[in-house]
Image (cartoon, rainbow, N blue to C red; front, side, top):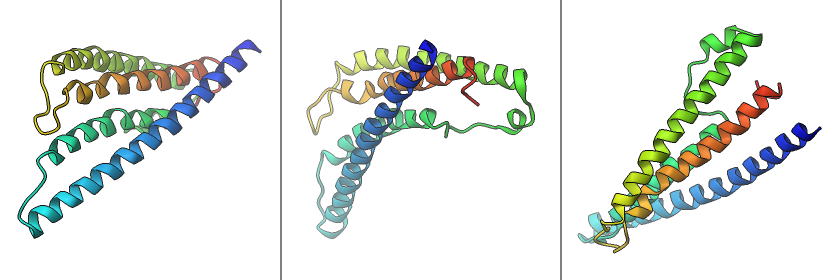
Length: 165
């Protein structure tokens, strides 16, 4: 009974994170699309441009890629070759799924560990046109890794209690 409530609560948190991350990603894509479009119009029609657009685009793209990319682990949309897993059933399938979760934990740890190193280095450097620390772009890597870890942890717990695939 306790484990069912725990799983339901973890899933509710994952659903909430999914909604928040999705909204942030949609807003970031919209902002990036608008400013890049304006930049193209200014550059090719008026022969001038805004100096900060490239830097803001880089910042937004990193957040879209790493934090938005963590959503692929929420709904299991990440690229995988399932030909072998689709053909097996029972315990071997569960073992392979658990192995995938463990490899994902290792991957997210490496992303988080080295992403934090880059974020610390980014504290020293600034985007010239917008005058903010590059930390704000690099910190998207460990934040995305934490979300990947959480979504994978929920899947692993569900696997152990036979609620996962």
